[in-house]
Image (cartoon, rainbow, N blue to C red; front, side, top):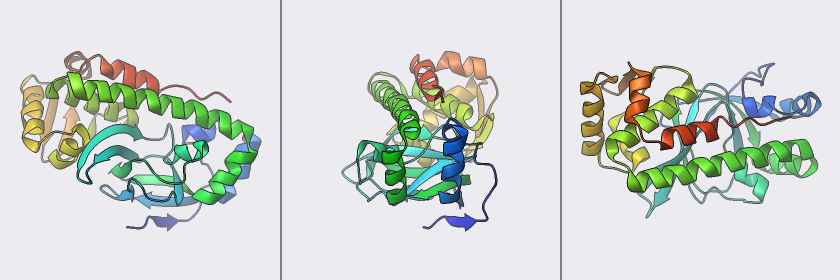
Length: 240
């Protein structure tokens, strides 16, 4: 499914990674970017695909899923306005390592992968920003892996919902049981039980995929300690 190309916007700084670039480098990159709309559930890439495009989200959210045997998945990170999809290009990778699925529809800036690789090679300021962001993504992936191995479904779901809340800056969003099951690497019944437990405690309201976080502090208390670590990694500033 292709992203729809929309007319250019004059300000790409709503993406914080782009905004972290020096103004002259930001101005150089803007003409290379297409403005696209991505839809919920859209697969932007599959693990092993050639990296054809780089995405810088503005108000959308993309889930990064590790894939085993072509069908079993586990969310290893999220990309929102703080970052980009395709950062491993900066490390010399020509193929993707994860399945990237749009979690929330919205807008993004998109750049041709080959052109982006050339830009990275010539642009030390961009290299610095990308390496720092790559380190933050790796820290998130490591902690999520630890969380998935050692913590119960209820705490993991609380962690996932809070991270989504932070990325979207909203207490209300839409996530289906199926999507959460793929993200957490559990069966749908596990998601149902965990969501019911959080709802019974008055922490969330969950109906037909529509989620509202009613008590953020209480939900944070129900989450494992991994939430604070993942949040800190995701919020890591990228200095100019």
